[in-house]
Image (tube, rainbow, N blue to C red; front, side, top):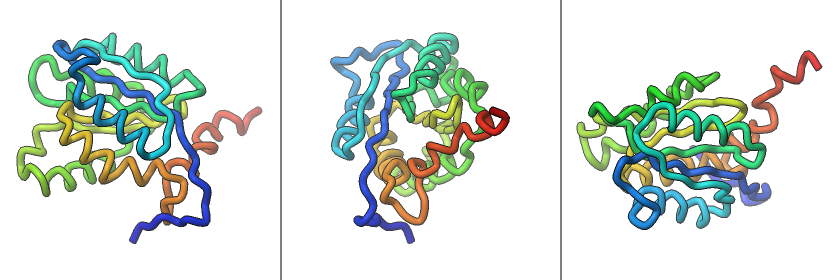
Length: 181
């Protein structure tokens, strides 16, 4: 089972939070606030935060810009993962993925199922890697953000988490680009 190895140092990572919504502003962005609070509580750095409308180009442009920022290791989006016509976050971001993280969606749905039952199938939560940056695409509810952070991200973004975690592999994410150099 997983555990925290207290003999290892905590390593803070840089995180950007993007809320995808046609109606929310920073003043009433409960899902973004939920993620920001948990990021700070865990000891990580919030490097950037923004809200963009449910528009594929706007979503992709913002996330792609963040993946090119060396201070940002992780991008977490919230919103736009449902099935309505305006829900386009997976379509906007999956083309950026160099590697998909299918297990994220599976574990997220397992955690969510325990709380909301079969309604979890209405989310197209996804994750992947682009420009050596982890991207996590979450539903727009505060509950979904709590489930994803508390059940997956908090541990996987903690270098002390054993037997393995994302932080320990971050230095190797672009090794395929350095081999020829």
